[in-house]
Image (cartoon, rainbow, N blue to C red; front, side, top):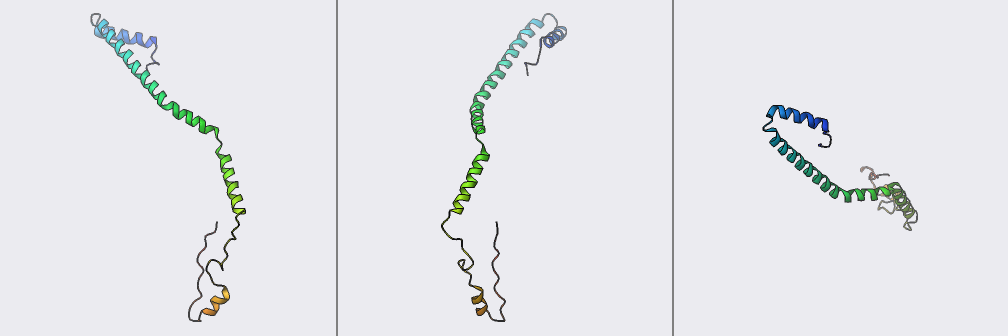
Length: 125
């Protein structure tokens, strides 16, 4: 903000202020303006330092996380899940184990007046 003001701009502002205020009030105005300029610059520097102090831990954490490769972790997790599923000793349930009766039993129990029972909808992956 104040770093972009050069010597040339300050001279132009000083000349305009000298013309507007006159030679009697200009030295007083210059002292006040320079003091205000220094104060504002000090406030800005303090704010920059505070922001840097607050953001440095966050930057360090982001840099630490950037070193990890999430794709590798996902691949390892997927292969571990696949290996666990393949090594699972429990057999997968079939229709007889899910509580459904075999087709012969269902047809023998049903009468010609009742419609055959419908199988529940199964979600497939």
